[in-house]
Image: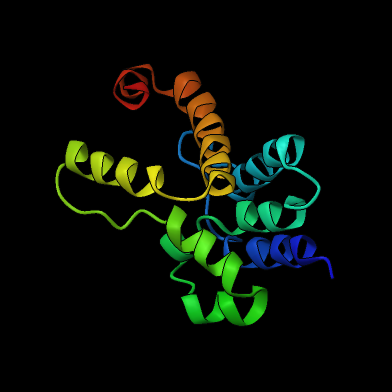
Length: 139
């Protein structure tokens, strides 16, 4: 079974109308970049799982895909990985980011790896296109 190919196709469909801030590029460019970074560091035993979650990591948060849909299509572990990577914290930016750091500190290392890949992708775009926000983001 190749979940990661199915995850890529699903992500391309659900994000088809979403555009990247600053560049207006297809949002799937970001997802592909995250999946590509993950592919360079994932162990073979986790490769398909991690690439699947990388492709899907913003589907709940940005596209309101349900947990039930993800679990039905990709299984419980993929759904949980995506859910853990989804930011639903509320409050000021500092409170949201502190809560997010706490949530991610307690998750499995393979999920933290995907988050790092997401941060790498986002950082490159922010630093290139928004120097003012980059100073806030990089903190």
